[in-house]
Image 1: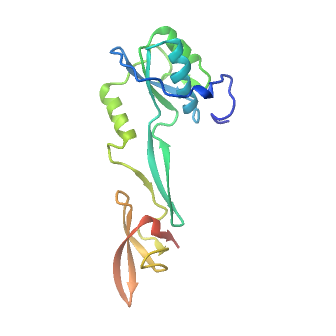
Image 2: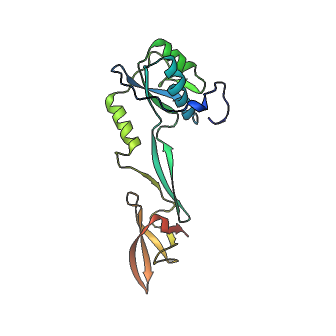
Image 3: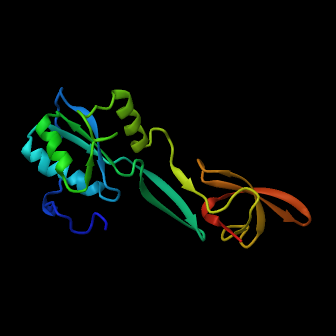
Length: 200
């Protein structure tokens, strides 16, 4: 089952708008452990139902993601990949009753590491690093390349269309691959965009 299927606890779909940003000096960041694939449903519960029951005690709710670029048969696609599958990060002014409500929620296994005792908040350094990853301040876009150094590839477009060569190096940051072609008996290295090359 996935989070799109009906579970024991229904979340109103019409009220999925994010709550207004709140400022609360008592807010701390906590990690809620959800069942894999149900992160968005847990986020809606925290954003809507928990926020209603505890006004001004629920702040920002995050499911950190990162762009992943992949190239298949010359076609480039980008999708959002969860950085921490099974975890939702939430600002709370936590109290014992709220802890029980979160632990009792469908599709939640509690607070890591063992769902025992009083949950421990994240440090400011930890949450800053986490937000930096999600916002791309680490300048890291994950690129999945369907070929490797030493592999034979064929160019699918551009001035070297239909040329076959061997991958010499890959530059994920620039989205470029360096290919060695043999032209008139001489080796010629050429840099080409990922989207213009596919494995033979």
